[in-house]
Length: 143
Image (cartoon, rainbow, N blue to C red; front, side):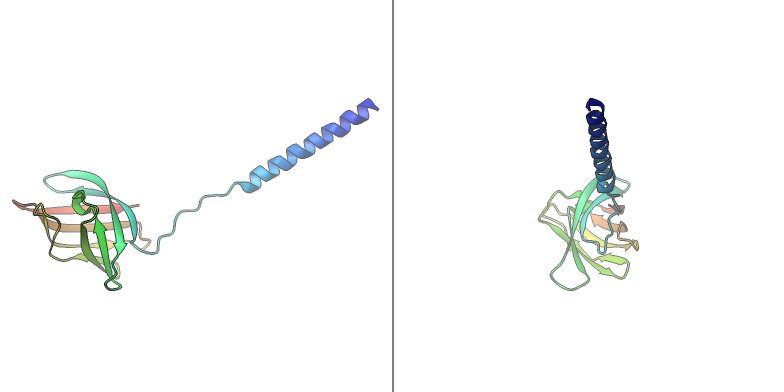
């Protein structure tokens, strides 16, 4: 009788162990890569010019004015989250027109770039006046 009870107990333990293992395996989910459908969101930026090579983050927001208009905060790592650069996205091309960045005298004179098809990289070249000279800057945004 004792042996029969021990066998039954082992089978129950084995069954519970098996069910636990099945539960663990079935609950594991493979993380699929994020699919982006727009340039909106947070981006990392790697920027180079003859004056500096830096990395920083920017946020891109959809502007309320027009379907193709977007705003970039912390452009050129200006440090002001409430100062935005206005951009326009037409197809896979992004454009920046002449505009003042902030009270420190930074002026974006022009800029243009390409957004890749899956919205994970933006290659942007622009000219910015820093108060003394024009800087030609190449930036890569990535996420």
